[in-house]
Image (cartoon, rainbow, N blue to C red; front, side, top):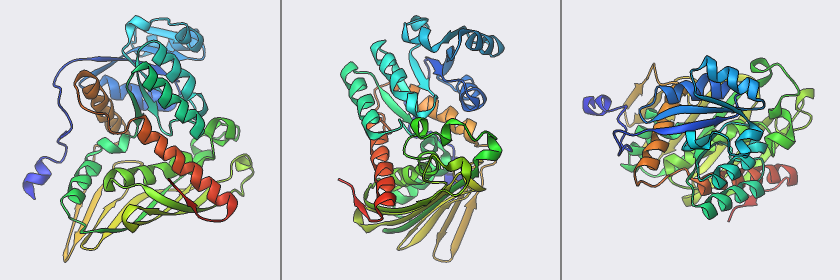
Amino acid sequence: MIDWLDRYEERTWQTIESGTVRYALIGLGWWTTDVALPAIESSDLGEVSVLVSSSTDKATRLADENDVAHGISYDEFHDGAASDAYDAVYVGTPNGYHLEYAETAAELDKAVLCEKPMEATVERAERMVATCDAADVPLMIAYRMHTDPAVQRARELIADGFLGEPVSVYGHNSQHLLEMIPDPDQWRLDADLSGYGTSVMDLGIYSINTTRFLLRRDPVSVQAEMVSNHEAFADVPDERSSSLLVFEDDVQMVSTSSQHAHEDTHLKITGTEGRIELRPAFHGECSLHLSRGDISVTVEHGSFDAEREMEAEFDYFADRLLGDGDLYPDGRHGLRDMRIIEALHDSAERGEPVALE
């Protein structure tokens, strides 16, 4: 056990020790400026060389404030400005704009790291995958939980049989969106920009995707119920959402999410022999709780927050670009999540289960 704890932060995925990937950051909202940018600057294999925003003035001002070489507008990015200054793009715009920036990056032969969910609709996500495939540029979807040590170690334990056979999963993710961003006209409440909804697209995806990562299984059918009562959520159907997902091998998952509730986040997987729980899971510093027989162990990591998850995520992406390893959460992986989310919304609207191919 001591040896396992000593290597708790070990990057078992890392193959490259040196080299640099230069990033253009597209979309300078708070997540990009407060989390992604400092994460890259503290990473081993990355640096930020270009900032891209709605206006040259804003991009230049933020570039100066953060000691970044270039600040350009969206239009200038599409025109190829500063394209010699970066190797890859990080797309952090609202969901409904991801495709256009990925398309331009592909035209410029730049690798793409796109925030989750990868687009607003399945059709647009399919176009992104096809565009990057045709241009032969790498496309990865930014699932930061994949490189969190708690999730990495949980995955190893599951692969080693700690759970026995997985039986059931319960995932929950909620936050007070209107307290975080007190604007009822924000993009996450705009169906044209957010996509199918807000709670599942933005929060429920964490539980679903992390389960896919941990179990290496996908849902085969889903059933959901959704409701929006608050006036700010009038344009989206899922202020509150609850879902039943049946994964391969009959693993049953219950997933709940809400953008209008107390912040609470956890993921619990129960098997025939043991239980693994991430609590908190997706906000804050992820902790790992293990139970098997009469033994229970809790591993709390007090320094691995979202910024450090992103730091590891950017290093993973760079490692794959600089080396020859395969990208695991590639475009097709993200597209699968989009199809799952579409099916959940379809089920809620129809009031019946929906099968997934």
